[in-house]
View 1 (cartoon, one colour):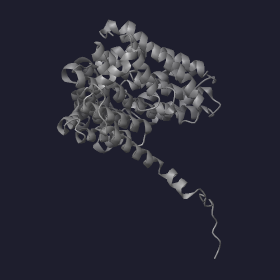
View 2 (spheres, rainbow, N blue to C red; view 1 turned 180 degrees about the horizontal axis):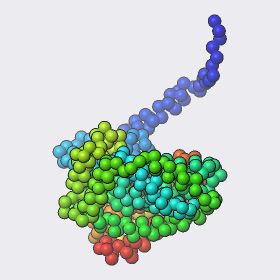
View 3 (cartoon, rainbow, N blue to C red; view 1 turned 45 degrees about the horizontal axis):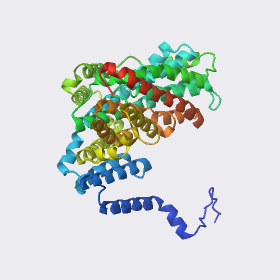
View 4 (cartoon, rainbow, N blue to C red; view 1 turned 90 degrees about the horizontal axis):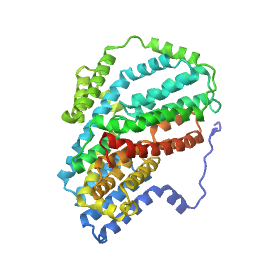
Length: 482
């Protein structure tokens, strides 16, 4: 019998058995400790001024934050678990809790996902990207600027994550055709960072760039009955987005100087790929028409008809003309985000209705905020820092109940507070885990951590200052007064 060759010799763990068990079960120990702490807290008397229902809502809120930040459970599962615990602990009735899953924001984002899936699935977005780059990217600087503005522009009407995933292979085609080397080419870093920053900045401009805005507006409507029209939100965000597009590009070319003479090979390759795709198909034309009509409808009739109603009608039109199939939609729709919406809105509603959010504000943030502007500055700074570590939507879900109660206690327009949380919560530049757009760019292999963190810290500070300037000087002109 011939001896067996072992490519990878077995490694024997020589540590004591108890240490191995502790190491392998650390996650379960942490979860067990969480359950024990929650049980002990639930048996204690509520603090002065807080009802038992509000106290239990606050305990559940803290546990949800811990699970979101730690990542022990998927974010959608955590939201569902919080939703289940509301009736089980007597914080809210089951009917009242699950009715919140039908909030308009849930159906708006579902419709937005379907529209984005149609743009990607039909190839319309990729065709548009290649055509724009070939048309406007005649020089290295113009090509980088086109990538940057294209990423921002597409993020106005589809998820910034989807835009980054779509543009990544297009930019990879350019870098490969130009022969740019990882670790050596500053221009390659410029192109990939242009995707990331373009998606981040453009993603806050409208309701369609990410999950934050619809979730925040859904919580606002549920708590106060107030809302935003598509046009109102875009106008408020544009005062930050427009200057950030200028500042962002200037910083990009400052941190990543152009080190190539021309981009002719890259444009030739893109043009060939564009010709290979052939003429515009019927499905692409239908998708483009539906998208234009939907965005126009949101801007003109969104407040009267309802953003969610128009989004679902647009999705129905795409199915009617067989542009998309349900099987394809299941691949593109982020069901975890949809599920998280219902749970987050229900949890926020429980904090508001039980008085827990108002109690928390009176005992905490309000004591350190002598003016309304200081409150806006503080909560927006917390949002922009927190979003580097956890999901944008989770930041909104955590801060909105506190922010709305704070706005109520100080007599501030709750819509201003909504903007102060949702807009900064989308501006995560520094860490790959902060946003998928940055993670996708980092995954190219051309960027090191320092290439992301140092420029990201600079643009994040500028973004926060621009936000404060807009809130103080410009927003009052469009009807949002602090």
